[in-house]
Image (cartoon, rainbow, N blue to C red):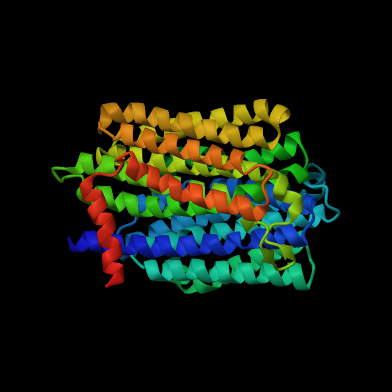
Length: 488
């Protein structure tokens, strides 16, 4: 039990700092929308989506291999594993970043329309190189169970990056260059914080046999990792290719407004894995896991309606530089509910994935993600020319839905659970009814009146679940008990 509590404690530390870090990064969205042109925002989003893929290539599967070959009780072996992984990443990233840097003038015209595109490409080549130098030192902190230090390093890097972004963009007006410099300085700062660990574990000589074994283990993990990234960010490069930077910016800014659902799903994923791995031997494990999906769906429904109903009021709030989100981006607000539903499906996927981890049959997971990733690429190319950013978000939604269906069908054979489908479908149907009622009924109303109507509908959604006897007696008593404890 002590070990389980320790795992839960570590998970909370990682989860809290990750959520706070993502929220702070999100707060750059209004800064970008108010102080940068749409072309600049679009090209920045495009560059960072490409960097996300480059980071996976640079890691070369070595992070996964490091976790596998790490020897807790053998310090000498650990140093050899650290050295092999670190030096491999250093070599790969140095070679590819140097090539990108040297050919920046040739690459720039196809990557950006900004006048300083060559500079951006060169900075863009440097950033993933620096990030790659953090991969193994941060993995070492995780494996040596230093979650507080891990979280603190990442958190301080985010704080510095956000602060420098604001300074370079608002005060110095450096535009896109300021965004890159902020991230580069933040990465250098992170390397400095971990320099002592790097020096401690890095050896002069690489053990070639060990490196070959690590490569043999790590390289096959790259396709699955790339597939997961494709599901998340491939929309932006394809939008850039098929449309223009302004459209990319419209998508990127509004996509970020779905962050409440993203944060909730992220916290759920952090807490979910240690939860089911510590309880799967319980007699009532499967009914418990089924109930978790129901409660996850209920919580997601509240977030969906809360943001879906009130996001248009949030973007109008006063903020540094004007409104919270510049009015030129408001035409894309309609994609926010679709983005949130995609995040919800990602959470459902992770819920279904529990059985594969419990039975140690995880080979099915890359297959489901891979099929969805390929489908996402195809649908983006098919739908974007006809429906613009709407085609892109629906491509992602459909792809996530397919991944959920595939993993569920596999789970029925691997680790069957009788989920509370009737209750889940009631939640989804009620959520859809109240959402579309709120949108249609308030069309043409004044802001004040539409806010009141939507607020009443939000309360009415919860009330309707009680009227429909969605909650059983024990759930109602537990719900009342929460408020009684708070009152005391």
